[in-house]
Amino acid sequence: MSAAAPAPRIAFDRVSVRFATAHGPLQVVEDVSFTVADREFVSIIGPSGCGKTTMMNIVAGFVAPTAGSVTLDGKPVGGPGPERGVIFQEYGVFPWLTVEENIAFGLNLAANRMSAAEKREVVQRYMRLMGLADFARAYPKTLSGGMRQRLAIARAYAVRPQFLLMDEPFGALDAQTRSHMQDLLLEVLAAEGKTVMLITHSVEEAIYLSSKIIVVTARPSRIRSVIAVPFPYPRDESLHERPEFGELRSHIRDLVMKEYAAQQRQVSADPARRPG
Amino acid sequence: MRRTALILAPWLLLILLWYAVAYSGLVNPSLMPTPHQVALRMHELLGGRLPRDIWMSTQRVFLGVALGILLAVPVGFLLGWYREVRRFVDPLINFFRALPPIALIPLVVIYFGIGEPAKVIILFYAAFFAGVIVMYEGIAQISPIFVRVARTLGATDMEIFRKVIVPLTVPHILTALRVALGVAWATLVASELIAAQQGLGALIQNAGSFFQLDIIYVGIICIGFIALAMDLALRTASRRLVAWQDRIGA
Ligand SMILES: Nc1ncnc2c1ncn2[C@@H]1O[C@H](COP(=O)(O)OP(=O)(O)OP(=O)(O)O)[C@@H](O)[C@H]1O
Ligand SMILES: [Mg+2]
Image (cartoon, rainbow over the protein chains, first blue to last red):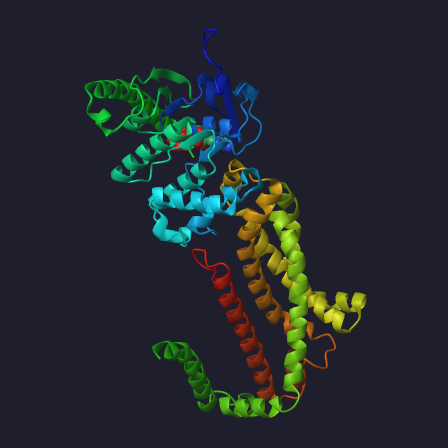
């Protein structure tokens, strides 16, 4: 990094993670270094079970690296905090709260105090944006998988975190809703300016949203390549039609397919280490 | 209409079966009172000792269950929440749970005498061990994801306890209460073996020593119906209180 570059907001420095499992130690992340600059959008793509969620959990403050360090604005990550909004792969919507209460949960905490009027306004806005307004009083048990996912997204957006850590946030959505959610995310970012780490299996999604894509290897996760996405923001759907988009997509897809194939071999060779 | 019929049908069937057995000649008639004999006796006793018996038994069951659950909730919570503690304490709990309360009666009498406390302690014992197991198995199954989500939204430990852990614990408390109530009613007769003068268990035992079979049946039916009514009431309350749950534990 040149001296003139601005300080990164998130920095992985030679990070390794190893878990103790019933079958002995399992190396999940190996010697990973990368940085995320302010307002940068970084996507991570890699095969299932390679260690992507683990990397995100380090930034979120739930997993400590076995070696190396992860810093946020130059300081090692402590515990979790509201400045880092996390959208978990398994959503984690609160089943005992209605849709609107779920979205309001973060706003009712001491850490994010706001006036009742403001709170109502924020909750209403995100319910509308996520297409959940008709279900304000419904409990999550009555929602579809895609609606729960949107609810988890709304709940995370509502507290306006500086960082967004998103673990396959659009995975359960149909193609139309997914593309709508992607555009919505771009709008929120344009308006609020966040620094984003996104985990996805979709190369198109990664290109469409990111300024930088990191392809990681089959477990243990190492960095295969870091690809800068050259398209300026704001972006819209027409980007998908550009020939450069197609070229970049095939290039990344090749890289990714090789790693997915490697993961397949790994899984069939060692059934005891099937990803959990 | 259909619903009522469906609810009543098994009971009518049971009564029919009872008549069939009583009139079949298979059983000595003096050993098998008919349903209407029992009904008559119940009517008679309702004007006599029965209300007092029901009151005494219900009071003992309530007290035993209240004390048992009061202890089972915090203990079950700790065991469910802290895996290491559970591994340590689990065998002990299962050891004590396996003991039939009736086997403890001699000890209870020696240590606590033959008054009200002795009876309530037997019920407390049964309620506690039934409740604590339901509690800690329920709590242990609470997914850690909810606590994680709350933390990433900025919740403090206190907020996590109040806004995440308490609501997730309520359904398990209600289930523990239901199970404990059931077990306590099932243990009632044993507890009233301890020199009880009043109570449904005492009624049954007295009747037993005088071969008053109809009274024995009255006692049994009362216990069954009171337990059933309480379970229904609790189930209805749970459905209201935890409407968010996918299903109420059967
Ligand atoms: N706390 C843990 N203890 C032991 N092993 C773990 C733990 N967390 C994750 N693992 C293992 O580490 C590996 C990587 O898990 P991780 O969840 O990071 O994968 P992933 O890349 O997010 O996969 P996916 O794309 O399927 O979500 C898996 O094999 C998983 O079983
Ligand atoms: Mg994952």
